[in-house]
Length: 434
Image (cartoon, helix red, strand yellow):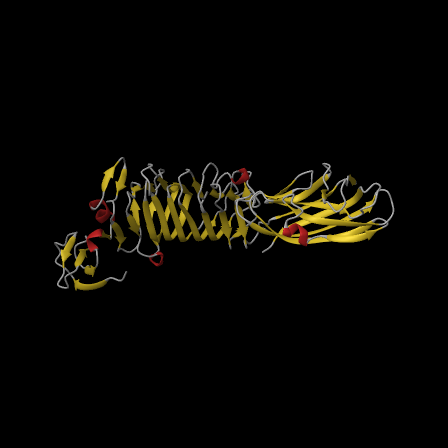
């Protein structure tokens, strides 16, 4: 929003509040008497411009030891240099606009209670230092629709960025110079959680950048977040097993960076938990969807009917590197995510007829224990077998949540005699198709 002056050097009596302009719009008078300007803009009755601590005090009330802003108002700093506050601020559902970070430090607060408080509020366009306290303590009351928006903001010094428990959070183009701790996010009734272009820096080995332990978010989107701290520090704290994200939602952390020697992820959560998706972050590998399984011991598969496929099970499968897919000892590989995925399966199997002779042996990758499924049939490989032989297996499958694949074999011999198949080796590697 642009502001254009149309009256300058008002009488020294001055004043604050709204006035009517010759343009039929509403203007705002800067509180400081003397050489100041009157601006015209739409909805200016909701804007309070302050230049000094006295201006600020005259347009707030002290409640519970805090400067309480007027709900729904925009407090716009129009001065130069910084204002040293003797009390913290209750944002009270208002917008505190610090003017511009180009003007340097806007607020210096030396108290020990959190600087910005309330159930809702916004802060933008400035630099703040509160070396003895957390910066934010925004905690919802349960009324619904409570928020914290922070934009174009730099925290020069603080014991932490603070604690947030609201319904909607947006942090854009913000950062810190050197703070002792980052954000601690609490609460379970989150709707929106967006952090974009956020730079957190600390020299403390006890630093935690973003702490989500105990919270439950709906759909977190964190993009271009850089966290830099020394060895001993932690970038992101997450509870195990995606416990910080509501079922069927995602925790997205993309295009960021973890630097300085810190541990990127701790707290029991991992980048491969089913709702956690970390991609294109410096200092951290990407989340993936994959598993590697194989037979631990040879298996004899009993074949009773020619050309009827039977599962290679017998509790003999083992696996490793499972991420968002699970495996069990019967060779089932299952989609544990809460979304459909497309997987690429590569495998091989070494098999032989038990009783000798030459039979037509077959193998397949079977979808949901259904050998007649078209996806299963597509993967069938055959060999006329008179000795131990190897078949390669591959296929692409669309797996809904809890769908699975496994390995089946069949013997095409229609004659009398033992049709059982010895499977001496089998392995399957499965990856999500990008």
